[in-house]
Image 1 (tube, rainbow, N blue to C red):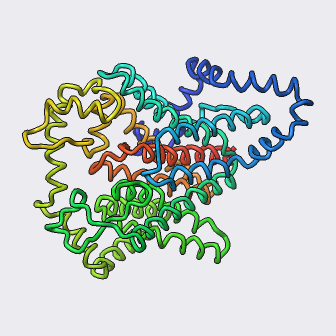
Image 2 (image 1 turned 120 degrees about the horizontal axis):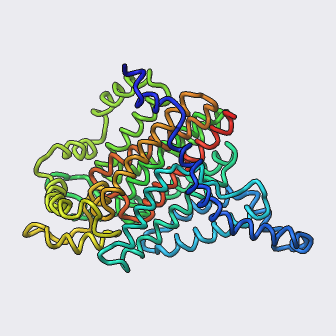
Image 3 (image 1 turned 30 degrees about the vertical axis):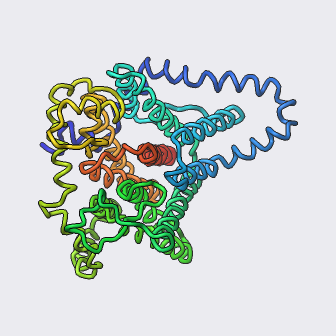
Length: 467
């Protein structure tokens, strides 16, 4: 009965809902509209091809477009390595628009490049549509539109990556560039820790039960928990790179590069990041070769006594009812759930600031001003309503489903390893989302969906190989 159920058939079989979406009239109209600028530019380019081909400037652009995946990699590095005190969200907007202009130029001169919305999961499209509706129906539309801009460039980046990556080599290069960026943030974090020194921040660490923890590394992200989120999201890619490299010395090189990152993950002292990373590693091993999972669990148990005492004590505080951060989160969530009862259908509007304004009516006496609810799912529900949270959860579910199907087909083990790494990072961070609003910092929102774009690009390549 289970094997013959429609649900199991859906999990194992072809993606009928995506096929319905791709064959729908709405999709064809939408896909035609978004490709109109490319068709227009292509006509102009080929009409005046003799003039354009002799232009030195356009020859340089042509060379850059041939190496567009490297440009994308540098784009991701820049988004990660600029320190928080030097970073402005408008940098991300400007960089994304420049990358999009370059993508349009590449699509203009390369007839096989288009904006192919069929490669974007329909549920992700629905999610971003709910975000748009939330912004325009907000109780404070002007504030919400500022947040909408960053969601827009995030979705634009997903489209660019999925539509421009057309080979495993390009995908592999993009992932390696991203990990080099993470490595640079780790070096900067070690510089903070060992050279500059980091003072203990009482607002981030309960000193009564965390003696000896010391200053928490935050690197370029401005907050140790946020930096821990970035590391959880990206560290699994080292597993895929090491597995995919054929040369023994290259494997050793990437192992060495991962060590400083693992070290600064510990120095973030982010308990939720440690737990989320452990879950990400478990998911990675399970999907890669589940027969090793018992050994992984055994290794984790054996390693606990060998951890530095400060880290071991920090882990134990997860179960300490007197921990101030746990109490603080409980204080926040109580009024947040009361607020949900009134705004569960539509939410109050996109953006943490709007939630905070309305939250003032519900917060308990003595609770200071809060930046967010410290829970991704509650925050998203409060901001954008029931449709947003449901479509987001279904997007994650469909990514899991499609990744399982691709792995089972075993078309390309290297692409499968990247799929596994990306999904592991996303699911690990989704677990962390129960303890923090992981999208509060816009760069983390961006990197979360970059991971999703890597999954979508990998699934596209798997389908191409299957054909």
